[in-house]
Image 1 (tube, rainbow, N blue to C red):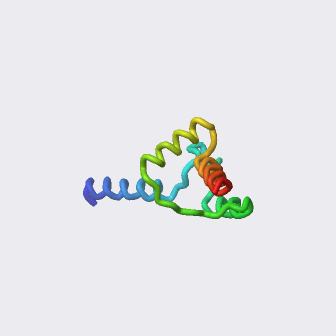
Image 2 (image 1 turned 90 degrees about the vertical axis):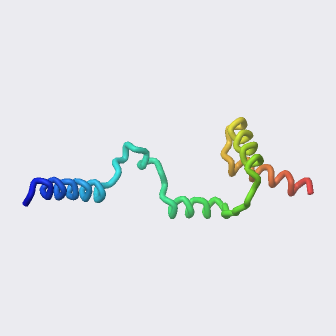
Image 3 (image 1 turned 135 degrees about the horizontal axis):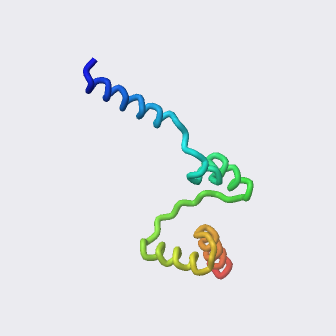
Length: 88
């Protein structure tokens, strides 16, 4: 074999080992829950996914308010919707 073929095979071998290896836990994967598990947790809490298309400026405002109040965006939107339903 030529030297270039040997280098190419070595590179392919390295790529295959990297592709087949898993990500170490130290990169944040240890504390995360997979989608299936998160869905089960949400269902147990009585949460239902609800997709809505909103104006970009409104979304920015909601993110800012959630950060200012120290709550998640889901909690803030849920609270705002509940207040609107109670008032209406």
